[in-house]
Every structure is written in C-alpha cells, then in structure tokens.
Image 1 (cartoon, rainbow, N blue to C red):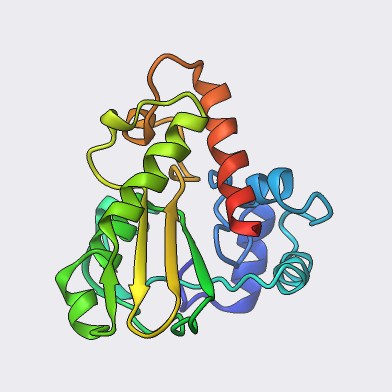
Image 2 (image 1 turned 45 degrees about the horizontal axis):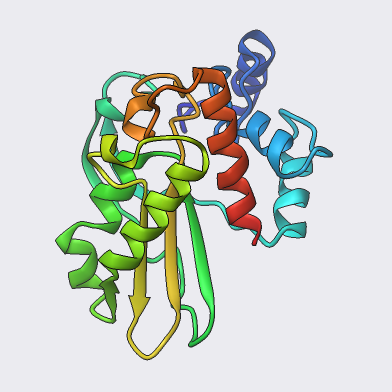
Length: 209
C-alpha cells in the first residue's frame, strides 16, 4: 500500500479489496494461509495481532530484506523492483553451536542478497559452506521426490560464522505465484499440487526444528 495513504483511505481500501496493511497483505499472496496450514492453525487470517502473537510464541522474526527500492507503478511483482538497497542488518550472528534459520519467500532475493559479494564484503566474518549447502539441498529435494539437477539457482545455502555458529537460508516458491517455475524448485514427475504441498510442509517443519 502507498505509505502516503491516510488511515481512513487505507481502511476503505481494505474493505474493498480484502488487503490488510501487514507483510504479505495482498489478496493474491498465500503466505499466511501456508503459515496457518503448516505451522500454526490457530492464527486468524487478515488479523495482524493474531499473526504477531503467533510469531512471538514461535520465536519467529519477520522483516523486509529490501531496505529501499523503486517500484514500477504499484505492481507487487519483484521483477518490477529496481535500484534495490538491501537490509544487511536484520540478523545477529549466532554463537558457537547455535543455528539461525532464515526462510525466504523469494529465491531471487535470497540469491541476490545472501550470496552476493557485497553481502560477504559487509559481513567479513561469514563464509559460504558450499558442500554443506549442496548436501542439504539435494537431500531436501530428494525427500519430496524432486530432481536436484533441475535447480539452477540455489534454494538453500549454509553460511558459517567465523568463531561462531551457522546461518541457514531456505527459499520458498513465491507465495504470490507458487506454481510459476516450480521446476526451478525441483519439480520433475510429481503432481504439481502434491509437490508444492510437500515442499511447504518440509520447509515449515525445517524452520521449527
């Protein structure tokens, strides 16, 4: 929503469109439906306080990874975002023996931000563990009867903290258009709905472990 909208206009727009002013508030975005199905069946959709209560209970933080950008008109599509400035300060380094898990709702953002040379230049204590990354990714995709060879851009990366813990990042298919390019997430011979459900079920289970 336009940040310059006045409260009464925002309220009117919510009633007309079904959108609500919070992360993934678009009517075409499925993220909170997925969250309710695979993580917390007690949340009320379109209810910000209910969602925040669940996030606190499950010790989950939520943020934008893009700090600022230009958007083409009011499109919700990532491909219409330009001049992106990423938020490199949204997490703290885990201590030795600890694991921080990041669930990304865009594989594009995960790869553009978390694997870009600028990211590692900014975080000089972090280093990509490519063998561990590939091993987890391959096993994750095989567990849901997918083909790891179809993945050209990573869906999972593991990053080591020098003298510290581990940061793991897993990408979801886009909540706004999850069936588009599921092949990039390993879909091979499985039925599309079944594959997506298994992917989401395993991704949210991973987040909670």
